[in-house]
Structure formats: structure tokens, C-alpha cells
Image 1 (cartoon, protein in one colour):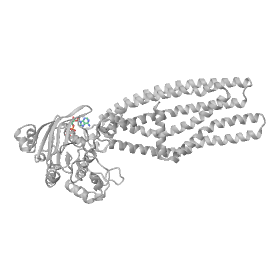
Image 2 (cartoon, helix red, strand yellow):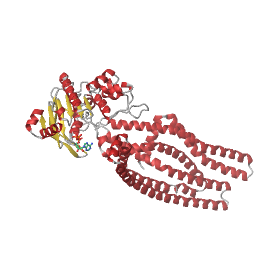
Image 3 (cartoon, protein in one colour):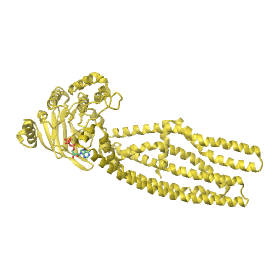
Length: 594
Ligand SMILES: Nc1ncnc2c1ncn2[C@@H]1O[C@H](COP(=O)(O)OP(=O)(O)OP(=O)(O)O)[C@@H](O)[C@H]1O
């Protein structure tokens, strides 16, 4: 509850920054609309008393005022709605932008890959949608607060005991808050299963997985798992809903008792001649209004109370993803070297995901200008090695030295501009074919020459003539006229993107070539090797992860990873002579090709 006023102020502040005129219009109309009903009740008292005493003009004026106030009460909220609806949309756009910036502005991959972050993100992503209702509820509450304040003044002026009437509106509010806390806990507990269920839903409805699902006849199994997760989550929410509804009903009962008592007090006062018939009518009308005001507050409270949850989780997300504060001693990060002379050295590097070690005390030297192949079984730690080299995860222990300078002393953003990388789980940017490749080097994105050269280097030039609009073809199903590509075509464009940067210090290809046949992959790697030799002046290292030993064998250095450790390294001939894991894997693959 303590956070709620600040959360409300922040939402109103955001709305004000988005559009001052809309915020002022919506707030003004809601405040006037909120005061209209109690004022109409006061006019009703005047109408009755003056009619009773034959004051016709006064009665007519009071009647006209009642009509105007009732029209205001009924219509102003509608006009306010037009303003705050647009405001809420502007706010949502701002939140979406912030979420995108937060996740992409984080220095590493933890924001994407850590389940705790993912949970928080799933909740915030859904909850920011609710700020639309929260804004409406907040403005409605402001109007109601004006109405309630006016109602209280009018009641107290009639009889001090009537002050208790607004006070008995507090128990329903407290009960509503408790009920919302229960719901909040239930939603939190359901975030992980909901995420899993959504994942299964996407899997079951995604065209990409449809082939596999129907061949393996997995539809029923996915439905069963989805239903199981969903049943568990809805049962938890349903229970919280029920308990909340009972709590709210108990709160309302307290108010109903207060209402009955107020009516009894006024009947006694009128019978005793201390109040007029108009006073009696005023109390009955105001008491009914208090009842409706409280009911509205209780109905709106969950939307507003939810706001503190959104605000808190957004703040947690901001804090969790914000870059780490600078180390004491405050050094300014060094730029990456213009060229590599010695190479990149890993000393005792370990990496852990959520505490589980996946790289252990890796010692490795990648010489400048070398072509390096990394091999190993699935899950051995090859991609993890690449993630630490790219600075996507900081090592849990050890150091990475770039020409002797520790990587954590080099400006991360600048380091990444000197890396070119193609991942096995590459992204499918639904832009034009030109842009899909061009974003690999933003400063040269618009250069057709650069895009064509990158496609040529990637041996992917053949994709473009197959597209109806050539490089200008819009790709993917997000566009009405978008062309869907085959998996291999997407992969080739991704490879072109990875080769957009011409002179990186580190060029990494993490199995982005599975869509190519072994000969094409071989030719591609040969091309890199030749290019690396040509650009030896920069000392750039080419690092390839592959399971194809026909490609791997030509590397200057082959690194064998197993169980998160480097178990062998050397060139092909040396590793074959050694007769270890590499020789065994190579032999197995060679026999399979015979
Ligand atoms: N984001 C993550 N969170 C937790 N564990 C992870 C994450 N990414 C990978 N792992 C685990 O780390 C280990 C190494 O994974 P990695 O992706 O580095 O293997 P790999 O050698 O590249 O495998 P593959 O050849 O199948 O691509 C695996 O046990 C994997 O389950």
C-alpha cells in the first residue's frame, strides 16, 4: 500500500509527459463529473424545502440545476474517456519501448536466459497492459474522491454521527486490498507454468513445428501437457478469486449495516422536528450515493492496487538489468586494439549458468590471424565458450586477454563492433532481404555493394535471384506481401549478415552452415581461411564451430571441448597422432562417409 501513491504519481507523471492537454482534460472532466451528483443531491433538498414552503422561483432554479448536474454527471466521464483512452495507448507505447530498451540494453545475455529474469519479464510484459485500466481507475477515483469529500461535508453538516457513514466504507477497501494481494501471489506462482503453457501453445500452432508434430504424432501429447499446466494455474487463480470474493462480500456487509443505522438516525431527527423533509431526502440520496461511491471504489481498487505491482516489478527489472556500477578505482574502459598482434588468451576461465558450471578452468590461446575450429559433443560447452568471448556472459572465474588487455577493461560495446558472428539459432528479421543482411553492419546497412559482397563471401548470392523483388523483397509472414523463405535460405542470409563486417578482430561461425552441404561448408571455410591470410595485417581470428571434420581438419588450430574443459588442442595432424578424442571422432565420421 505504501508504494501505491508513488506508483500512481509515476503513472500520472508519465501521462503528463506524454500529453499535457489530454491529462489536464481527462482529470478536469473527471473531477467536475465526480462533484456533480452530491451537488445535485444538495439541490434536491433545496427543491423539496422550497416547494414545501411555496418558494416557486427557488424551486424552479433548483430543479434546473439538478437537470444540468445530472447531465454533467452522466456525460463528462464519457468525454474524459476519449482523452484517457489515447493517453493510455501512448503510455503503453512508452512502456513497450522501455522494455525493448531494457532487455537489449543489458550488457549480457542473463536478461534473456535466466529463468528468474524471464519470469519477471513475462509478468511485467502482461501487466503493463493493465496500466490502461489503472489509469482509467485512477482518474475515476480522483472524481470519486471529490464526490466523497463533498458528500462527507454535507452529511456532517446534517448530523455529526453521519460521519460514520463514509468511515464504514473503509472495511470494504481493506478487504479488497487483501483480496488483491491473494490474487497477486497466485499470479506470481503461476508465472512459470503459464510461460511453459504458452511455449507449448506456440509450439503447437507454429507452422515451423507443424511438420514434426504431425509426423511424430505429438499433437495429443502437447495438448495433454498444455492442459495439465493450464489446469494447475487456473485452479490456483480460481481459488484465489473465490477467497477474494468472500473477503470483499464481508467488507460490503459492514458498510450495509452502517447505511441502515444512518437512515434510522435521520428518521428519528425528522420525527423529532430537528430536521426538514429536504434534509431527510438529502441523507437518503447521499447515503445511496456513498453506497455507490464505495462500490465503485471497491470495483476500481484492484486496478489501482495492481499498479503498485507493475511499478515494483518494472523497478526490479530496471535494477536487475541495469549495467553493473563501475568498479572502485573508476578506470575508463580501453578501446579494443586496432589490430591483433598476439591474439586472444583465456586463463582459467570458468562460466556458470545460474550457479551450474559449464566451462571449467579453460586455458587457451587463439593466435592472431589463425583459423580455429572448435569441436565437441552436444552440450560440451562450445557455444558457451563463444558467449564469453563475445562478452555476452562475464566469466565466473579467470580472465580473457585481448593482446594482453583484460576483456573486462575493454569497452564492451566497442569490442562487439569488432566481432562478426553467425549463431546456429540465428534471428529471422522480417525486413527486406537487403536489410536482413545489411543489419550485420549498421553503418553500411544501406550499401547494396556491401550487402552483395557479404552474400558473395557467404556463398549465399544464389538466394537473391530466387526472390520476386530481389534484394527489395519483403521477407516473412508479418508482411501482407512478405515472402516466406526456406530454413536454408534464412540461414544463408544470416550467414551473409555475419559476414557484413569486413575486418573484425574475431569472426565466429557457430554452426551457421548446417543448411549447406559438406562441400559448400568446406569451400566456405576455405574462403575464410584465404581471407584471413589476406587480411593478416589486422590479425583477425576466424573461429568455427562445426561437427564436420572435413571442414575442421583444415584449421590452423583445432580445440576439442568435452564436459566444459579443453581436452585437446593442436592441428589436425598432431591430434590424429595423439590418438585421443579428436582422432576417435574423426575416424568415426570418416568411416561413415566411406
Ligand atoms: N542459458 C543457459 N542456461 C542454463 N544452461 C545452459 C544455457 N545454455 C547452455 N546451457 C547448458 O550448458 C551446457 C553447454 O551448452 P553449450 O550450448 O555451450 O553446448 P554446445 O557444445 O554448444 O552444444 P551443441 O553442440 O549442442 O550446440 C549444456 O549442458 C547446456 O545445457
